[in-house]
Length: 269
Ligand SMILES: NC(=O)c1ccc[n+]([C@@H]2O[C@H](COP(=O)([O-])OP(=O)(O)OC[C@H]3O[C@@H](n4cnc5c(N)ncnc54)[C@H](OP(=O)(O)O)[C@@H]3O)[C@@H](O)[C@H]2O)c1
Image 1: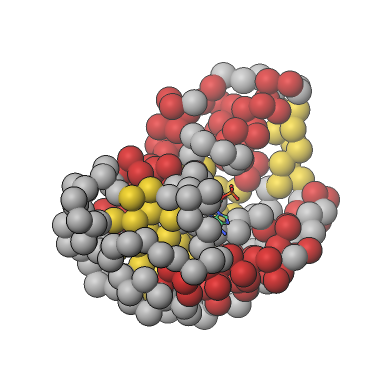
Image 2: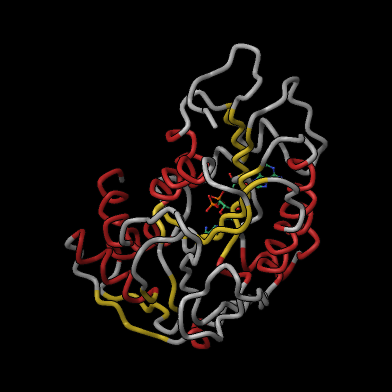
């Protein structure tokens, strides 16, 4: 599949939804010439009229407030399921970004594509139901995204690390902190591969506390990480204790280690 060049009549053009989000921003860089739509330009919960037929849709728009979804599951479903239905109705193949939160985290070795999803919370349920709206394309499950825009764990730790001597961070959830620049680059590889479900996450694994310690180590911030449990943090949404993702598919894009992603991200901040 060709992409990267704006098409004067729009046919075959790459459409990016959620272009204002952290992954959306990285996709816009990886696919120059794409039709990049922020929420203000294109609300996926409304019927979509583009005036042209896109060649592929990189669907990065989503309800991503995990705790907020517990309070308003209908709202999360509207964006993640109905929104994906509207995007699929455009008729082009869709890259749908899904989540490690479709798994319950009871496994103690990496989740692969053939593992059965069993989401613990409203956000994971909405992302799994969204997967089922994709008629043609790629379901890309990734995890713990961070980038240079918006709110994310790296930005939060940099702020807290500058204000405090110590931070309390959860040390009993294990995942793959994935740099959006690496996921966007992998998307370029993926659209040349067969469709279906693909697990695409950073190499390596970490707990949030280990990730925080690496952020402070890389930036020289003198802030101590105090490991705490998920229960102590007491967030509204349940989260999988273990959600490391790996691919069992031949030719799956291989992402660099999360620490390399962290360094690249910090260099941009
Ligand atoms: N963040 C993670 O850790 C993570 C992990 C695994 C998978 N994912 C998936 O990866 C994708 C990208 O995540 P991200 O971290 O880049 O999220 P993000 O930074 O929250 O970006 C999502 C974007 O979608 C927009 N949006 C929300 N509702 C919309 C609507 N009705 N119509 C159009 N746009 C709408 C948001 O706009 P507003 O800001 O204006 O609401 C935001 O710009 C999502 O599908 C997410 O589920 C994320």
